[in-house]
Image 1 (tube, rainbow, N blue to C red):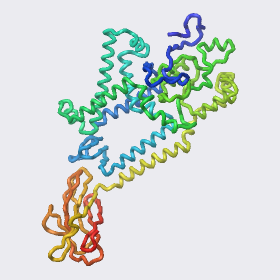
Image 2: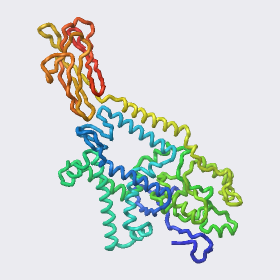
Image 3: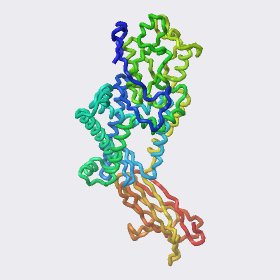
Length: 527
């Protein structure tokens, strides 16, 4: 470890650790072939506002994933009390007070549309923030790194351990690390299956060994994928397996926020700034300490420009800000910036590209930035492209909420018998048969009144309920279920020109009312 306080160096220079690290991925070097051996990355622990923000995001996302299946929601005695439940057997999706039936799958499609436009919106406004903060791969890799650091130590200790020969201590640390990773994988798979059945019941059944085989297969699969992707492959998933780094370029423009090395103030680099300044050489703010490379989980050097591997996690910003604080320079050498802002400042530092970067062009005699330097203005985010994505995202959400509030929880479907389409009675009347399906979409029993409207003088008969005929029947409907009945409609006055009528279903208590237009077939006018 080299320090600026090493012998032979000006003792007045600030003490900044010089980290011996090279980027694994660099645009200045030929890209490795896909079959090249992996260069393991040992990211150093970062500290700062963005690292704290990532801790908060990780706690929230993991807390939601692992704990949400255990949250209860009282829906009454006839429905499950799990707040979020994908009941595949019952073909229901419960989300707190919302219940989605199979024919309402368009709500799920609406959520997917919102997710897509939300991703476009975030990427256009603040770059790959999804990748850097909330992507499951990022969150679980962060969690696995916490375990690795706790057992094996920080960057230098892990590098030393990797290079050391196998010993009892090394073997014990490796076993503890991988065993913990596997336990996290098991918890990940276990939490997933709890979304598809009552969590306490399934957990007890799973531990007893009498759960369905698909539960064990799912946990085994997710354990393996979590362990391999989050623990072993890590950055390779983002670089080689994920399509989003290739797609996100189409979402960015010159006003999108991305993590940027401001070389217009950092170059030329010098590890001995005071000595170089005393000799009259131009000096930028970058002290070439490699702290930004050491903390990068993707193994890149942000100073080499924007790269596909960068997930904009901003840990390099925290590392660089810490160094700037030590040497008394303003923060922001590496920062979130837009391309238009960067290009403007770069043009100022290079006289429109005519010269090399000149530190004196961006600072006044007191060392402060000149007024012409552009700084981030949040209003640049509110541009037409961002507004368009936001409007579409909000419109889909509002439409879904309005439809949810107005939807009927009572449905009526009628299917006319196809063979025979009508029967001639001995008294000359005509009888048509129908299969009537009443759908009670609330988790409580109801009494539904089925009424015949139209066909003056016609009557209906429901053998399942009574032998008598009439124009109205009260039908008990079980909670969250469909009631299927055979209904016969008999009509004598078939000379009337009108042969359509209405089946009406009413819940008099809930004031719900649905109708279905049905056809009555008679000789010579079968439909």
